[in-house]
Amino acid sequence: MSTPLHAGALATNLEHVRDHAPVAQHIAPKAVKIDPSTRDVIDQLFGRLCGIFPAWRQAWPTEDEKNNAKREWIAEFMRSGIRSMDQIQMGIRMSAKHRKEFVPPVGQFIAWCFSPEAFGLPPLERAYAQAVRNTHPAQTNFARWSHPAIYHAAVAAGFYTLQRLERSLGMKRFGEKYEEQCRRLGRGEELAPVPVAALPERAGPSTPEVGNAALAAIRNRLGVR
Image (cartoon, rainbow, N blue to C red; front, side):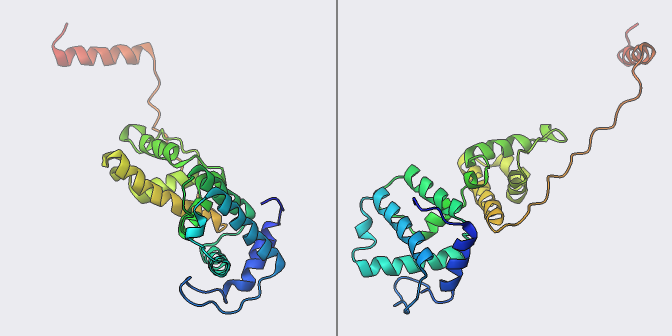
């Protein structure tokens, strides 16, 4: 996507076709007038996808089918809350990273658009490691969360559950909740801050007399003179 477009313009342009785009590719699309800016965005996107996935003709064997797919992708972008070119660029980068032969379904591409990296968050594996570490009972009152999205994902997944699930299952559960938080960020929501852990009560003053008295109490309990 060599031509930069303003994120607000993208959302506005897509708004024009949201209510008229077909719900699924197998339904014959209505005639839709797509403004030039939106057409430029989707044409560039499909051009990049054709370059990344060599078997793209399996998905779009004819020009008509490709055009129908473009309308469907625009509609799904609107329904999913894709609001900026940065999100689409992230989807393209993730497409290249997960390079395969066939074009992914639009739902998979949208999931890539909401990747944590698009919002400056750590990737799933690092976020999961942080969640597992911070939900351990030994970390009570000491856990440090690098972003509220990780904390809220851990809460939704369940502290107890994260500590007991096998890694692959735990990461899958946490990943689902982490993606939900990323989608909230993508919709422009502001996540609640991480609650400040209560500091442990400070012990009384420490003096030699206090220490000696404590040691004497221990000796008495042990019967040591």
